[in-house]
Length: 364
Image (tube, rainbow, N blue to C red; front, side, top):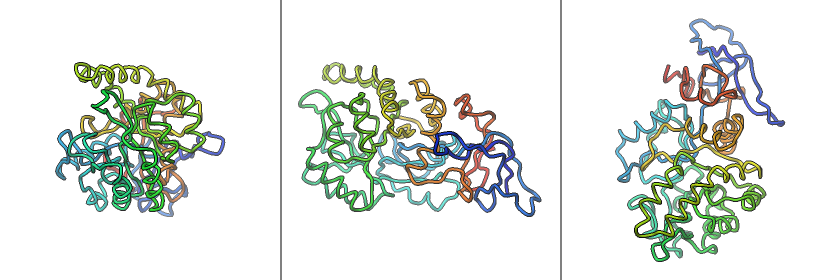
């Protein structure tokens, strides 16, 4: 049993205000606002209580050279957990991490199966690489393998043109999204380029990953279609490195990546102004280390979001979108205890006093 003695930032109400509760209890792994009959031996945790953070775009079990072993995958997940990310949407991994579901020390994971990528148009050894005529079958297979999500690589450099280009004919992408939906899965698509976004809209893609090509017009269309976007600013900050590496052989690509890098903050502001739901994601895995969820929240604030907007993208809003509870009565006790009100300064997310996962304090 745990007694949470500080203010509890339980949920956002219909007006967008935070419902603040005066303390709470953790009993049998769940949150209750009713004082238990007996409180003998209760562990007391004092501080501001926030739902466990969400990393809605990471890759557990994936490293720079491809799939990693179980011990490495465990360390990745523990790093995310200790940083406060207690719900992970694994946006594509060739590694089997189902064993984590039986380990109470691991954060909760929603998997998208393996990336579905165009042949020779993605990182080697990571995706299920297919040609357009096989896209529907590949997406259907990953929809059955995942936890209600499929990850498709929507654009990548086309070496024949020397720049970013869509990977799929819109007709095949539309059929593939329809097949995933018929199987009860939603589709998240990697997209950097402006050119790809109209096809994602036409195909009915649910969630755009990175979406650096966004502008006011496509943001409005995305909002009207109910699209969610995961900006992954801590990852797209590396676009200048991509440009430098590509300059000798692909100068058009390099110039494009520099332009996309420059307007990243505006793309985020365009999304917010249009009313698009934003999700916090770090793209941890391959080249990005795990445990950067607080950095991504801070990057969203730096880009122009109000602290409450960034917090919602990391907690209440993302949890609702992914079908996970926040801190309602009877919800699983996945939460952070913070030294100060994160609505005033999101940097307090970097040093939680305690992380509680499944009702147990896993990091004091």
